[in-house]
Image (cartoon, rainbow over all chains, first blue to last red; front, top):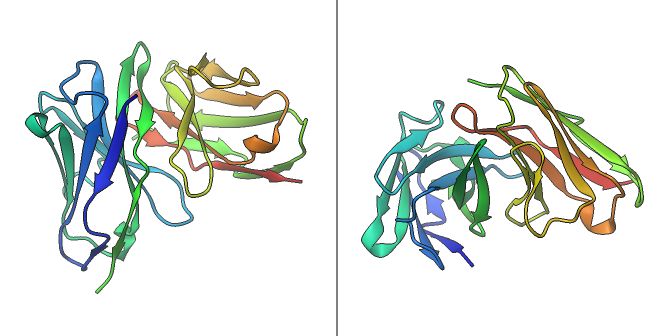
Length: 122
Length: 106
């Protein structure tokens, strides 16, 4: 059973960089056929895809966030990370890490972390 | 970017009702469409992928259909544990979620 766990600061100051790590257990980030994703959800609102990474380092990002987002993978530690720069209050959200399986019709998110609330405030 | 329009944004229903949620995309995405259920304070759960394939362990009262630009999620007989929010997601070009549908008790 794959499990994902987000970790990182719950409070970030405006204009600073939000940094989160997702540790994977019960599976390997080096497994082919899977992308490793970040998704967020502002309080009371819907889901927003941030981006994903393949173990080779290939990434895909939400065009609306692309200029501020970096996703990286550390295969030796079996984790992947998110950095979001120049944050504002609009970046306050629950941040989920997840695994996307590659199927015949695109990808689908079959495992999710529990989510971590990150608040942007001075 | 592919725009996704989910309707209705909310609905009230009773246990035993048949519920249908629609997701429309701004361009054809074949069957690159997934459905998720989310309960308050919890991560989303995959219900349906590739428009109509039931994820393992998901009750058969959930079904998905459609291709191209119009997709539906149907709950054949609503159960108490089905009161939740539902989201569609496309992965044809990048990844986008629909705005969500909240199903609550009438």
